[in-house]
Image (cartoon, rainbow, N blue to C red; front, top):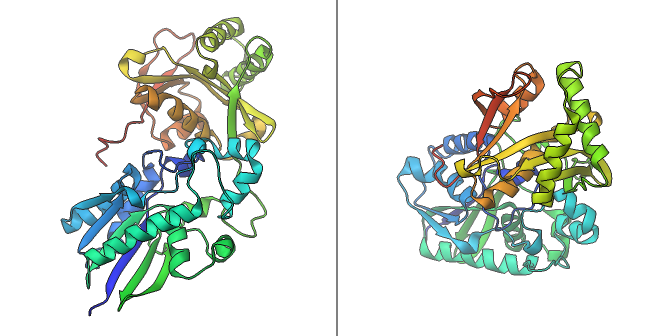
Amino acid sequence: MAVTKLYLIRHAEAEGNLYRRLHGWYDSAITENGYRQIAALEQRFQNIPVHAVYASDLFRTRATAAAISRPKGLEIKPRQALREIHVGEWEDIPFGQVAQQYPEQFELFLHNRPAFAVRGSESFQQLQERVCAAILRVAQANPGRTAAIFSHGVAIRNALGRFLDIPPEQLGERLPHGDNTAVSLLEIEDGRIHVAFYNDNSHLTPELSTFARQMWWRKQAKIQDANLWFRPLDMETQSQVYYDARQEAWLDIHGSMLHFDGEGFLRDAGEQARYDKNSVLQVLQGGEPAGVLQLNLRREAEKGVGYIPFLYLLPPFRGKGLGVQLLGQAVSVYRPLGRQYLRLRCAPDNRIAQRFYRKYGFYKVGQDPGSRVPLDILEKYIGFEQDEH
């Protein structure tokens, strides 16, 4: 009998990877870099015959599967059993918050320990059994053929552990993580499964690789990735924290305090916090204050907009790639409310901020006619089911 080949492929870079949030069954979008990874994956498989394409039913895997299905004219066959591990009450929670509030369980999770368990989650054993069974069903349906299976990082790692006969308690040490769009190959002949290779990301340049920008997966990393978390800022007792942030940001951007309306900023923030305590948030790294994020849940809501009046990091936390995690928090708040866009204002001469927002998908849609100083209106699309990339 001919050899059955199964390519196991991790999804492209998605919001959870970029925003540093726990996304198991949470359905998230692909990043701009993720779409570039998909293009590289398509090029890799250009001359490799594939007869069938399967994917987890979540958007990030289905979007990645198009790298093979679209050029080869194949239908994507969605399978819920190929989903990532369900992390229960941790779904869509920032890594930084989980590390702060559940340090012991987070360590178990990061090292793939069998003892990991949080409320509503799967165990690693349950995940492994579910995903391996789904992979074997694909093999049975495609004897002697080649199929591509698109799944998730933890799911693929645990499946490979089973096929490589690695004991569960040793998996965290013996089997490395796979990059976004990393490819593994199973060859099945006479009922025997051989792992030909695993976690190969050779189609990605360092500029495209997610792992090239991160440290958490490196065993000997001397510098750890900085993960932020958020908690409500009490505008009754912590208003000075907010005021100081506004004042420092204004001076940094405009070079003087001309036109600064600190009391007006305080009134607006207090009103928004009274409407929803999660509208004004303190940003933290570990136990250390790192900034402020302010949302306005009512402004332009009828237009499907999630408005961000203020996004701020303290000077020691700038220039480290952390600002995108604040955008991730805004997405997490606004998307469940049905908002399709993030919108904010930015001074046209604030080149650092303008460059930051362009990098993460914002574009200019106008100018604010009522502001005391010139301000561009910037917008970012945060829907994804109709994404036409």
